[in-house]
Length: 370
Image 1 (cartoon, rainbow, N blue to C red):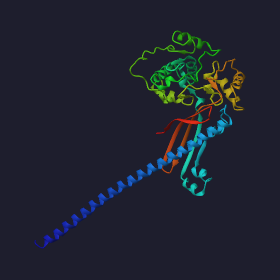
Image 2 (image 1 turned 90 degrees about the vertical axis):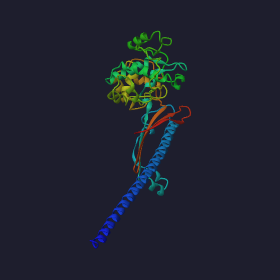
Image 3 (image 1 turned 120 degrees about the vertical axis):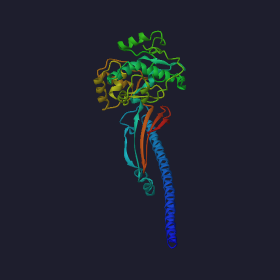
Image 4 (image 1 turned 180 degrees about the vertical axis):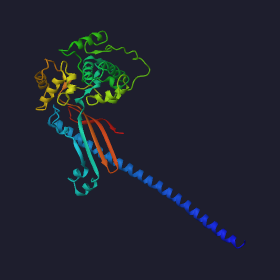
């Protein structure tokens, strides 16, 4: 029995040593794993930061294109311009290779793609509310009619246009933009308006300004105008989901034809699709708008007078074109860019304002895709 005790003790010591070594190995491996995760996280942050700077450089390059385009043709924006050509997925090295071979190798694993869209080719929901004097928000009846026509054309309840206008006004009521003066919507009733315009004007009597296009009650009671809780300001098309009556399917239908810009704007007749043109031109149907767009593909419009002639050629009765509602140039552009930098991927949407006087560009907002 005494002879066997030392052997047992040696066995217990060996097992204890193995346990200690195993525990140490587990602790060290955990520390190494956490260190590897931290290193990976830092690398991802570095790659994302580099992708953001690449996207910023591409945005500056795009703004330069917009400015040079305005210097070439300052009064006309059309689809055949350089700005309208999208950039397919291209290696950054293809751009840097013109500078030097060393820099070209640095961009071998980076890809760029993007496009520029005319924001004024869509119907601007901001036009539903006008500011004839600073601080006063009024509903534009003519723009409600246009929006109603667009909704009906897309198979959506046209009466929702009034609800959207009231929602827009309620959101702007506590915004600093309510002090902006009217810049893009007409302040007088366009000649040749149809019977629907007359009906809405009659409904608006007593709430409008001078019996014109603007009214505080376009046939829908705004009982919550003095409520302590105001709706959020509409800044994107997705804000329509907050308006009662709109479904995700309806918003998806509207997305190609509707936008929300910071100020009231005119529709660019050189770039707008047939659906938007048929909505903003009173008495024009979709087939006539498609004929108008087909004619536009041959030659773009140099001024509003060319637009008038093309509308007449498309079969539209004589209608007075207000340059505040329809124009041939653009001030707002949407820039969509995508950057793939090794593991980092970045998709960014930027709204850019181009000053028609100085041709300089300013960034209104930048949003990254989630």
